[in-house]
Image (cartoon, rainbow, N blue to C red):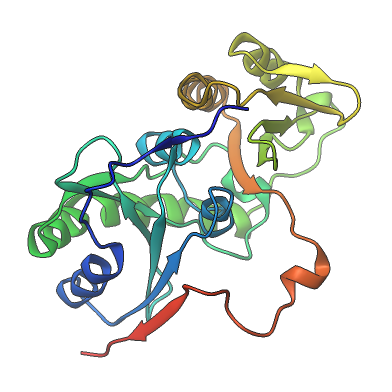
Length: 257
């Protein structure tokens, strides 16, 4: 597949510095985990919980972003920060989905899509506090409600869990799994092709821009069907997943106020 699009060589934005200062401007106490990507595929490992099917998902699919940061608050909120590939004076910030909730809890819940923020951490914190965090709170409340009130099983086919799991594969393609016919039809209409070998609907990564647009369009169609979409990175081998030390380039800083 063609290489992903890259950022300009003279791009001087520093994700780690921006995220660290941003954490000091947001309300509450935050811990910052910074990741420098050694390869394009690394960004998907750090972005697998990003709760977005809009600009952030498109940027991840189309560009090699080089670095990201996770901000974690004392009350469990997690934010993902990376460079905005199309605007050199901006960063992208997205909420990260809560861990521990099953896929069915996300059914019918609209993703609190991320936002572009200025490179000024003070202004960025204001935008996040006024826009992203309130939408995240609404989505999180819906997920928690769904988790505490799971739908009762029905004998009809419609009782199947209404969700589509999309997994980034090593070759850059995207595999989507669903057992619901309307969801499958939505995927096919946006360019996904059934692959018998993998038992999934696969979207080629040969054209990353087209792939990003197809993911957004498919997510919008599925949302209108009341079907949740979950993006995941391909599972790492067990030996790699249990390494006791962080990979090179990963740094952690903590701040308390």
